[in-house]
Picture 1 (cartoon, rainbow, N blue to C red):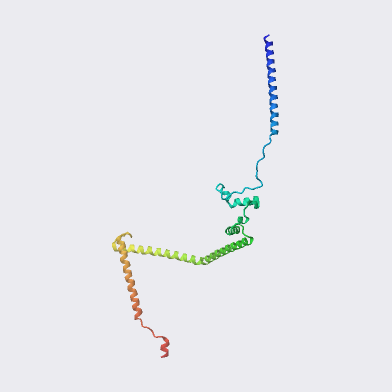
Picture 2 (tube, rainbow, N blue to C red):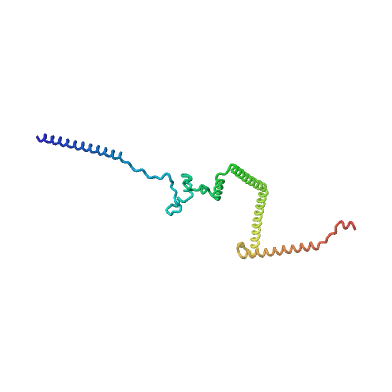
Length: 233
């Protein structure tokens, strides 16, 4: 009995849920139809666009932006509206200074074929002259090489001979110092240096005396008469 009552209540509840869902479907369909009808009946007002008259900024006004007062903006206006922009086409051309600058930049970055050929020829001539000067210098140095080698060998021999003579002179002075003082002296000692100074002084006196005697002998020698003078007499 209780089970049958539960089945009846469950069936009634399902029927009620179906009625509610069907009513919602009808309402949503009706609302959609009304929205479509309302959308179809909407007639918006057209935008008020003044296409016939272009926008020309007032350059004397403080409210006009600075970028709309430039020549660049005037070029855009003239390109878009033509003579209707009120821009004088002559004012859009570059000045003489600007035109010279443009021409100079064109010459620098886009030179003519003739200018490029002249630059290539001048560069090749400069490189050729530089190479020839280098080769000339190398040839001159190679011509001097034998003399330079001979001079270097001569200087090397003279330096070696000079060192040999200085070594012999030092050994001679050390031997003379041992003979004079009876013992070996240090070449850096004051006594040895004093002895060397005395010897150099004596040698200078001897050289001076020899030069004087040689001069006296040359002055006292008789001058023989020339052979031509004796034969004529």
